[in-house]
Picture 1 (cartoon, rainbow, N blue to C red):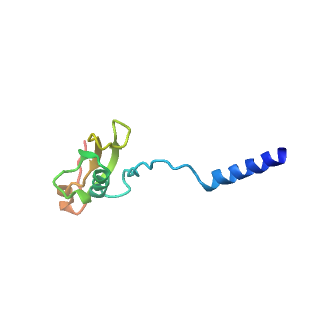
Picture 2 (tube, rainbow, N blue to C red):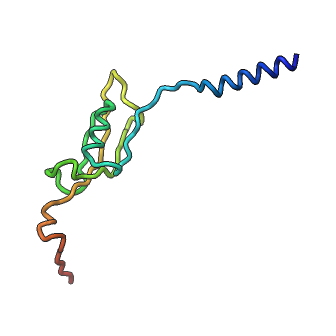
Picture 3 (cartoon, rainbow, N blue to C red):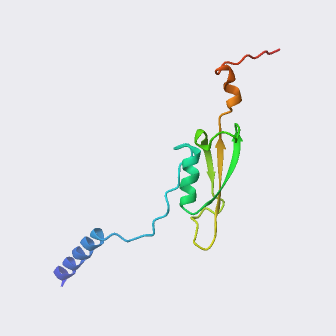
Length: 111
């Protein structure tokens, strides 16, 4: 009897390794700073999120692809569902083109 039990256990073990459980895949969350801000916003919108931008530095009048993402905040900590529109907040830092008028050279006077 123990030989049959051993074979059955070995067969179940082989089957469990060969057929892993199927889980619902969660969307891949973008990493802040891994790509430009436009690509990050596009990725989040494609996953079903409503994206709100927090302009943390620079000017928002430059193209979004010039900017970088410094943080992504999801207050619900969950992926969006088909019934609701979940909002994520993206902190964006953009260059200030007015600072580049001098070619990156600045003059400071301190007292």
